[in-house]
Length: 43
Image (cartoon, rainbow, N blue to C red; front, side):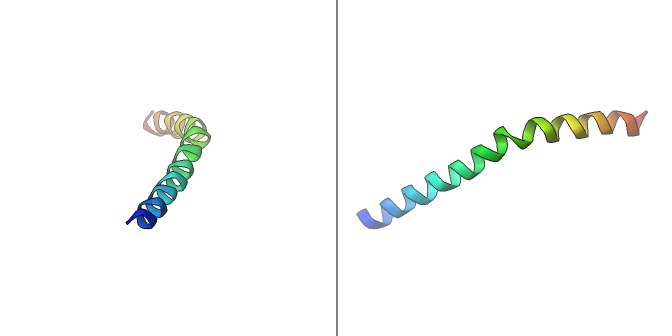
């Protein structure tokens, strides 16, 4: 059990790092671009 728990913790930490890093960098660029493009298309 301890080995499985350690593996799960490591995998969760790695997944958390992968999820948090892209959220910090691409979100500002991706959110501003579509927000600007959508109103232009609507107008």
